[in-house]
Image (cartoon, rainbow, N blue to C red; front, side):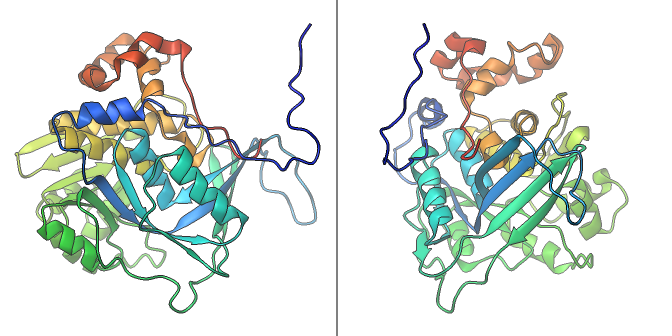
Length: 375
């Protein structure tokens, strides 16, 4: 006879499950930091955190005056949290400075990042009376539409980062001037990684390229790279950007990625992971996390690029935004799933020494992933 768990007694308020889905992030970080003093961050981030709600299984968008019912819904931290979660899941010591609303969504996001995902929030703050930004994503026909609600910060609601923590790397968006805290960290030896957002005006101001003088690693996608450099192919854009920034990698989605490291003279091309893509939400951030890990591990450019593609490829197999970022348990188990042939798996043999031994022993029988907050 099967006994059903009756759950908590009547009158008990619900409590979200914040179990760590990546318990192996600690051992992985220890492998990366072997011999290093256990102080300072691997990466420091700032930005806006969103409450992402992702509806899946839709046949299309609902026409006016109608209602669609679906059985697929996930919710997760979004915005800069996509990058923070992906970094932390690989074992990187991750610090985040962000604003959180004083509502229920803000409370969940803070707890999910700090308690479940191990992100250090000592530089973050709650803003009284400010509602948490929310994005609703409607996924259908391998595409998605999004609706976002976000209110501006109240006067004096946020304070600039005036005392940035010691960190091996930091991430900035160069669609706006590089912040002073990042310049300060760079002078102290921190590597500055940068991405750029889509330009809704499609003017592609060359001011963005001028800001690359303050950047060490630039990770645009192919469309952005070609638009800003006024070039016709990703390869032309890559070489144009390599004249401005020490390391540049251009993401090409299913076509993989290409990169140049001018500090070593390396050039590399890596194929995308041949898997069925369900949702690309946050894939660029997962790519950046993998590239950052490989950089801190001291890998050659081809390995950095391949690992970034591997992480991004694993993430797009799930409808889950930030919670689709892979853990080392999933990375270790992927080779046993049979999704790709052995000759493809051989490209990633270099990461085996960085997989905690316990994960190799568990294999395909142990793959964990955070549950969505709404089922």
